[in-house]
Image (cartoon, rainbow, N blue to C red; front, side, top):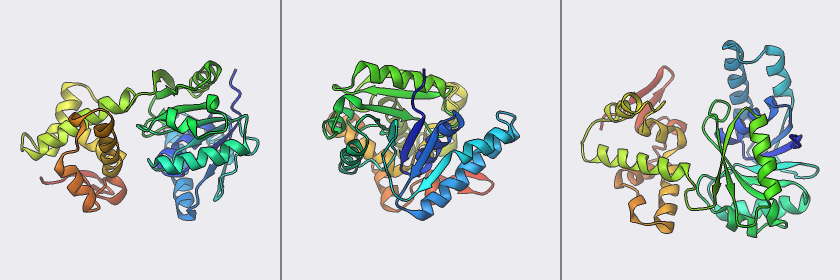
Length: 290
């Protein structure tokens, strides 16, 4: 039985907004919190667009879409009181995440505390919480309303019943969960980052251009999206942070290519800034000439 009826999502970026939408469509009462009012405005528009597309494609009725949007409460303050599940989807900053878990865990001592981190240690996060046994990783994929996978990450402290509740909830969302140990990069980030970094190295050494590298994986391996376009969607800064983290934790095979660091320093972070390995226009992405 799904008992996560009241959900707090902290961080109204692309992932936070998507997670809030998914939970609301499943019937939960959702609070989406972010200290930035402009981010909340953007998140509201993003959820409305996503629900609208789902209606146009016949995946949801207009009535259900309106009801889902009505179940999302947009707030500038994160309050964990009377929440069953709290999911943080803030930036990949361990200190920030620990502070959130310390505060929200004390406000909601019975709630499950979940992180959407794609690489940071859930065990370390759990150690900062009032009740470490209630801490778990719930790694959604971009965009959350469409991608079927949820990676459930088990910390050293996580109670078995919390894993069971999380798995049941993921299924109730219409997702396909996998359960992994808390190891650097988990399963998906470790494999995905390795592919993305190698694609950037190939671009650096002129093996092929952006479009060719992506088409190779889309057509040759049936990937729905090439690794360079995916990096643009994830955010080059996010991918760089994960690569640096995995380099420290695992080894030099995850060392970021100089081109990735150069683009991040130039502020070319992918779709969110309008340019990365692609130039993102209103008519669609155009491969950058490199």
